[in-house]
Image 1 (spheres, rainbow, N blue to C red):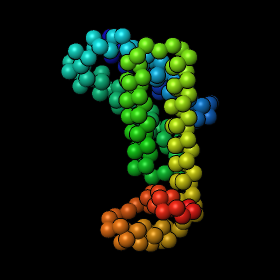
Image 2: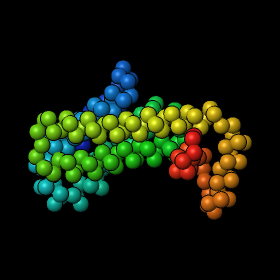
Image 3: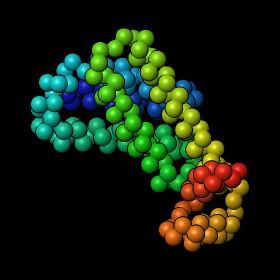
Image 4: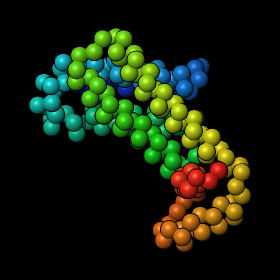
Length: 182
């Protein structure tokens, strides 16, 4: 039963993320809504499955589901964040998957109406879209506005001041946290 649910959910989420006929942020909204709806629909049986968790959590179906999910998210992140480093895309995908999973589990622990699901999905999708759009702008700017030697020198200067190693991705954060314009 659980492997069937995983397969259906995985197929649905993969088809949403890969649906290049729709703009990426529309797909994010569709993904969040579909995931929250699925979590709410599954909530009644989740308790029963929790007792059997050790038997299926590390089984072949679970491993297959996680791999398919990771591939779909990685492909989507490459599309949405083409100028980002692989590290940034992987971290972003992981952050979104983890947030979606944790929020979905918590949100679905209480019976919800269709309107509640839609409203919550819309708010969560707003957060994800804003984050992705901001990241895309930042990564594009880092790639186009900073020459590599300039960026490396700035990164080294920050590392010397902070006493730790800094990457190019930290530059925007440092500027914002110090109140400087990016």
